[in-house]
Length: 145
Length: 360
Length: 127
Image (cartoon, rainbow over all chains, first blue to last red; front, side, top):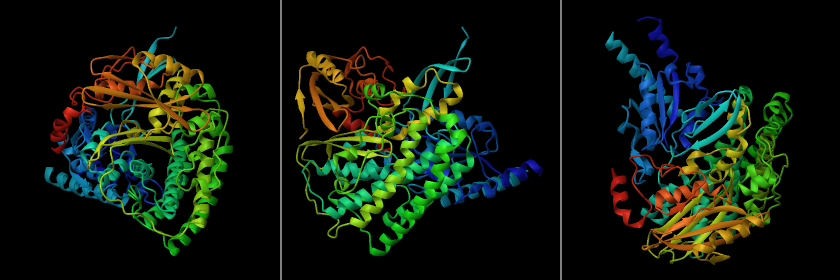
């Protein structure tokens, strides 16, 4: 495959969206960018614009209001895209399972490729999740070819 | 009159990772009106706390916010202990104070980094976060978790500090203090930092009181109010003076937080030195009586207010949490109109908004 | 036990709050409680500067109107909107009225904090 496919695997651009999480995973996702963990050495760049992104990193459970925003963001990301749910509450609702305004995990709204458990998920686990997503993307591209 | 435009700021915005939307009306480059649209982070924790049992709520309250989670958990325990009331051992009080101040240090370093990021000072953002990792390592070593420590239980704390940990804490904290002092010196004296923050988003003393602001936002406007003045936990035994600035602009708010970072480290060092021996918790059995209690403690972002009402059963009758950002959001209605559009991120950030706190 | 708590009538609320505003007290928050047939609202003030807290408490029927504090303390906007949408407390003339959708979205549960809704909220959350 061409240079675009190679670059996508080698340098994925990430967009982060906070549903209604407690911030714990958000700051851990942000901590991934900083000197100790430094994901940029893997070519991972954090993006503000969904139209430039390949990987959607979602933290926190979905509530009634963010469900719409999340669908919107997901639709704006060009194919092929990967969705990573970071944190136990993004995976299943977690500790917020019996809160009245919570729909549940991210997979109630958008399809999820990789689940990263942990409350809060450690930066190492988040990086691991991204790497896993890229393997999946590489496989998918190989098959689609 | 120039045509008016309405721009949404959020709910997904690169400057602020959290979901808040500010509907900003502007003319040319001047902001004329702002309306915060919140509710993206509302979960309903207060109701869920009525469904869970007392000890389980500690974990839920800690997840009101992942940045100030430690103090949320401690404050919940404090308010529930006041329902009986239960007196906790002095060592537990000191340990709670140490962990509170440790989480204040990491939260302020985090915020100072985000501020630098907001005006494009990328290298300073990275430096602050590099120092912050050392504090997180300390938290992990002493409490077992980087983010949500779950250190407090009803009647005391869950873990003790041994001599080796204490030594390591003192060593690392001194190192963190030295490094942050150097960085804060750059932040406070840099020409570009001052150009972006001095005189932006001014809040006068009267406005700050009338709008019911809390924490560094209030103290930066010259109001000497800090919940630690109530001398709860170990604060009565430590040398504590609230940090007050008078300018009331974004720069003053940054300076208050910068000085509080250093003060928090000093408080930890002092508390570690004075740590009394003894038990770390008392056994609390049964359900609290039908009673109500309030407790306020000082979070990194300001005063957090907990109200609890028990009814003699295993569940709370009502829990109400008023978080500092909840009190600080109305101040944006005063600070933002009249500013330049490019200053909106910095002013919005200067109240240290924590949206997941606000909406619970 | 709550210190410095004063129980007042609904009609006295605004004049009592005005006294706090004149004394330059800081509005802290309000707490709404569902007592079954009535709603109990407690307003907390902090005497600035200092950490002295006092409170005003009113009890109203569920369909009674309550005056808004936002004319005196703008900062009460958020809490009054919240009480309105989660408890159904009828606060009239709020300075910025979010119309019952400040925290709750269109399809969120209605008046979730009321006690008799307890079972419904629990079932939903279990999913």
